[in-house]
Image 1 (cartoon, each protein chain N blue to C red):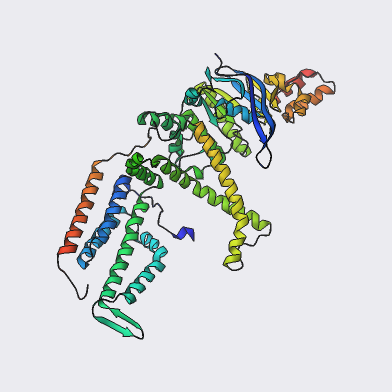
Image 2: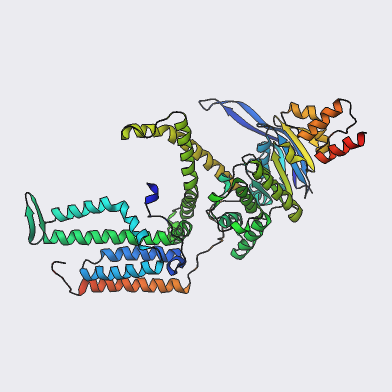
Length: 283
Length: 274
């Protein structure tokens, strides 16, 4: 069974003028087909306004499709009785680290999700500890979130999601507001989580480098999925990516340029070592 | 200036008072405030003084820190003292000059009123100094729970309070940022009279409000995403539980209130006019 599946998913909203009259329909998502299997690491790439965040909000039933269906862990997100289960199955981490921390103390914030689920007190404490350990923030448990760095705040937010014990974590541009150090820190945490907890991870981003380790990549543009495949397949199509205003990693770009100048280098080089190897093999 | 006000500030320390259940502290503070108003005699105030001194000592909060909280009410204090002193006409006249006169009753009332106000502030700031804002909201929520029957959204109000507490430092920081941004654009926030300065705050307040609403929207989404559906069916990570020390504190304060009331009301003990 798929962890997350979308079929002919459409999301439309009314476009209004200044007086509030409906002047037309805006199609934010158009016939999306998506299949994410348990344990997979899926990256959804797209430029601003491509609809990727709207899609993310569907996975948590914050938005429900106006057409087609979205299933999370086999549950239809349109069914209001399944709302709690859907949100528990697919935890969500948002972009702004400040605006998603509710507690005034780190551990209390991590406990917020389990509290909402009605988990007994001792079990909450166990989960909070487990969550904070998983993101390496256990020594900050009694701190105020205001004194943490952006990357640390995002790790706390991730711990808050883990404490709800979801099967799947959706990260909606978790690194967009962080400095390079914070970005690395958050990505490393996500990778470790994947290894240790074997959760499904869906990462929404516009940084191509974050997609290198993905099992599958979806590229979105104008509310549609325009490209789909493994990193190697996607990164091999440099021109197409550029058309969707996505920055290809430098190594991939360099390899592509060299290939075009007639060197025998394979398509879709993702890492520096691969390029070095390919060049060494040339002579 | 904001930093000078100690009312509502938490003073971290490890003391008996700090460890008490927040409900105990709220109820006892209320009892203490009531005890100040149900008697009006020298002996009663002496007992209150001893009680307060004992609690301050037990709380390990430096006396200087508590006194700082009084700065905020100095104007109010002087106003009440002066008004009571000159406007009460009761008993023999002590001093008379021009159109003013001070009577025995006036002097007594103004002194007692001043003591009452000072103790009132010290008592309530002791509560906030020894209780974290979070524990305080938890305590208020738990104490007001009976109001749920009258459809007062107690849980929601407590949630709003604790979120407000969390966002105060963030919004302060943001205000600072916006002010600097506007100053960099040539805004003059510091010169001119009060009216001009108030006007100059508009370009600071408007973006602050816009960003506060945006934050509120984001936060609401984040809370929903974490399965928040209101207070029903929620469990607590840190439930409030009465322990032995809490019952002891209740008994102690109740005893104080009874003694202060009985002694203050019925034991005749006077020095001069007081």
